[in-house]
Length: 141
Image (cartoon, rainbow, N blue to C red; front, side, top):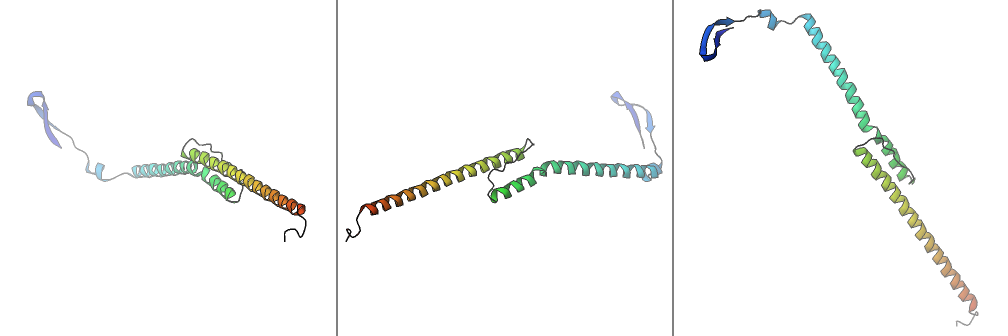
């Protein structure tokens, strides 16, 4: 490669050139190929390890959430999820815990209403029986 050697104001100082051996660009040495393959292998290993670590951090709380939801569906409303993360999964765990607490409270309120209804029916039956005892038999005809 040859070109003019110029300075400011387009003043020519001469001609300058550079050349490389043809085999320098076209042919790679065995050590260069080995180094390139080594770097690619190390990079792939590092990417795999970092990817596995990150995916583990993301999916670690999910099996716990699945187990807790199964326990809720089986009727255990006292199950809680502890999320050690500080991201969307923590929000999901907090909302799950709030849902479980709300379901537990609703169940308690429903059971209390059921008990009060049974108590009311028992009281009504008792009053009816007392009224029947007070009325002599045969006077209703």
